[in-house]
Image 1: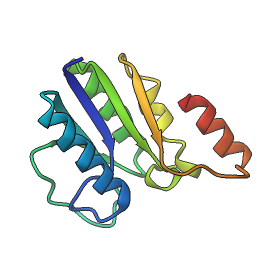
Image 2: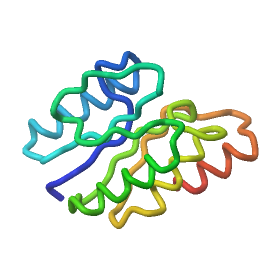
Image 3: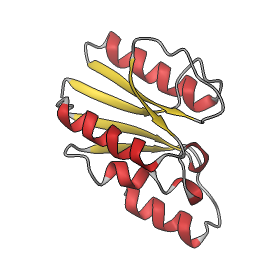
Length: 131
């Protein structure tokens, strides 16, 4: 696999997942992997993303998730690495991300950044779908 897309928050957005995604992206590029980032936008700010960000998904706009999947499929990525935390995706508990994932035509690896001890029924559903 030589062309990998990462989905998650990304600097200059300030959060731990953004930092994690950047570090993962940098490490993969240093290893010779071609990478690109699909950044999540919270709708509160417009971020001046670096060139690594090839597509932005608007957190609360369902069509943006569908467009993101179409972008990834049309650009022939070998795999996607999803950075998951319930609060960074739109819909109840971030359920919108499932609409993007179910449309992808490549493998998805998911990093779960939050493990809930007593998940709601919806959170359990989302994690099961991610698996």
